[in-house]
Length: 279
Image: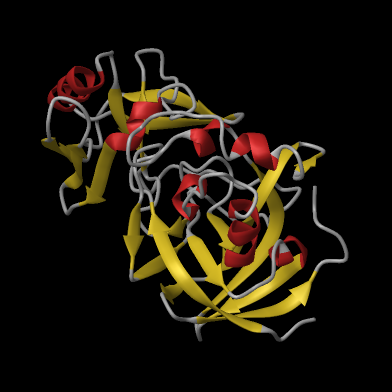
């Protein structure tokens, strides 16, 4: 049914793509999704993205936006180390970077930042930034022409319901946290996989989200965000009952209409539902 109200249980932001995320009491939405969410990423010498799929220890990097750029901290072996990455100048070298079929030209941070990251990770690596003049449209099959995203895997927002997490953890020998799935919005109250059928939801008094597509899950879900160690769960268990055309589905990709602020505790109202989940 529609009109059912739940609540926001947690909010997350990921300033540096594939690094550790941060819980937030509130987040602002801008044109690209959560403000400062995945506006930075790491690339190799060839411009290929570095992600936890291939490099699980990236989970041990923590990042937060600053007025100058990005404050990054390594929490893994060798002890804590920190560095402030400055936003590249307008004249900085730009490299083509391809993210799931989309190629964007991103300026790369200075040599000092590359040296710190390369030494920390034990391989050649660079910080790349997405400035306001870079446009990345969302897949038109699910989005409007004006919809945009930052350096996400494809959609500006990701949402999961608490009932779905409870269902999954009831099947696992060792429960996992929702952080494994890197959502932006974690909703308390809905039954398991109820969000599969959501169409439009209203959060608080300001924000409307369009739930457009289930999220296919990858090996990142098997990386423990606290240790950076990869296992087999929860992907192995999910593949036994959430396999659909296109992959193992868990959580929903979402688009937003306009700016606004999301807060922990905000009511989440299901305004409309889809007849069937989008594939």
